Each structure stands twice: as structure tokens, then as C-alpha cells.
Image (tube, rainbow, N blue to C red; front, side):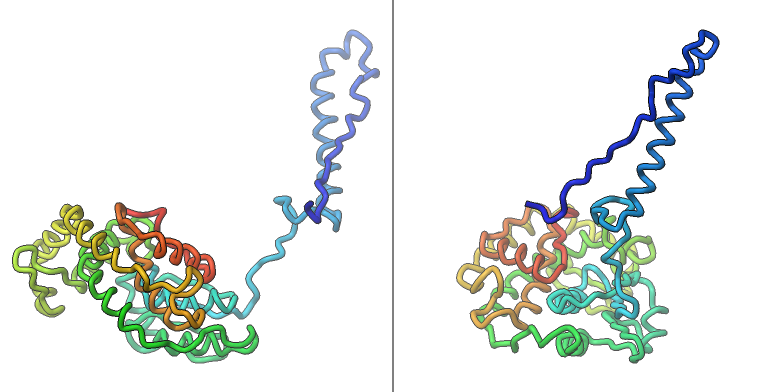
Length: 313
């Protein structure tokens, strides 16, 4: 049973018989009087209920009990970035409250003011200098004794996982990047200039030769040529999906548990593994093998980092 008993709201009707209006000349005012009496009685009842300290916290007008504490750290980053995801995972596992500040893809000013260059993620603790680099951020968060002992075990060597993830990298990239800029939900891509900058700085392979240009050579291409390549991989999703779904079958035997990827418990292995594979959930039509789907779902819940399934394209 619930610890909080349901509260019944009783509204006195204040002698709705309106006996004072028995005279014929007052009868036409009875409906208005009744309405006023009901409204007045309701207002009194609600006022008393709102001021009652035993009021159920589920009521809309009850005082909020879960507001973020003052002085919580600020994390700056991108939703699609696996480096930002790594930091969010550590904060979630540690149950450390934080303010998530999404940085637009074309916003160089904010990170430059914080750490002197365009980079994310960045964390800012009150009274401390802003800190870039996900590894340093995670070490700082996990080592914060105010939120208990460290929760992450050390990273282990998993060449089996590294080799498997490498087989996913090309189709994931070819499917993921065109979807990032088409998603209306990823906050870093809410403007045309942000999307254009991402396309300019993130090459995709030539559809004919398969060659991937350097970032400098890619940026030197006419804008129309870069857009054509991105459009090709958007319309060519079926072929890329076939390759990706085939590669995903290789996950069999790699995941120790839906709670942690390696046998020794939740560790840096999970920070790397989950952050690299979360992007799969943005791809509509991907066939996640059962062990991988269970792991991603459970780790999302453990770390309080949502998957992208509901916005899949």
C-alpha cells in the first residue's frame, strides 16, 4: 500500500437550497447565486488543502521537494558526442546533480571563453577552473568523496570488443552523420549554420571510390559537393543498414551482463562501450541483438543517459 493515503476533497455546498430565494422575484437569481456559492466553497477548500503540511507531494500545488541544489556543476557538451555521454554516465552513476548546458555546433565563443579553445565536454565546478577532457572530468567526478566512494573499476584490455566495434564504424558513421543533421531533437543542431558547420568539418567517404578525404581537403570542396555526399548516404540507408545489421551479429559472447560489459563489474569498459554504441539507437531499422539491446537499456537506466530510440530516423 502507498505510504500516503489518498486525500478526499470535500466541498461544502453551503445550503444550496437557497431558501432565501423562495420569492418569485428572486428565483431568476438562483443559478448565479448557486454558482457563486460553489466557487467560494471550492476556493476555501483549496486554500486550506494547499496550506496543510500533510498534503500529498503529488498534488500540483505542493511545494517542490526535488529542486536542484545550488552550486551544482555545469557540464557543457553535445548530445550526440560520445565524449559528452561518457561524462554524463559518470555523473549519473555517482548520482551527482548537474546542469547540462548544450553547446551549439557552431558556438566557438562559449568553450573558448571557458578553456581557451573550441572543445567539449567541459565541466565547471563552483570555485574551480573549468575543466576540459572527458577522462579528467570522469576522474574528478568519480573521485568526489562528497558523493561516496568511486564507482568505476579500472579499464581492462578487450581486444575482442575493439575488433568488433571496428566492423561497425563505417556503416555507423555513414548512417549516423546524415541523421544528426536531420534530427530536430538534438539541441546542438537547431540552426542552419550549426548543421552546415558539422557537414563542413565531418567528412564522409566518396560514394564511388570509397575514399575519405582529409578534413582540410573535404572543407575545400564546394558546399554543394559535400551536401551531395551527405544526401547520398541518407538515401542509401538500406545498403548501409544491411552491412550494419550483419556486423551487429558479432556481438554474441562479448557482453558479460546487461549490468556491465566485462565480468569484473561496472568499469571504464562500460563508459567506453556504451558511449560508442548509444548512437545506434538513432538509426531506424537497426536490428539490435537481444544481449546488446538489454545492455543498452539497462545501462541507460543506470547512468540516467537516455537512448535516442524515440527520435530514430
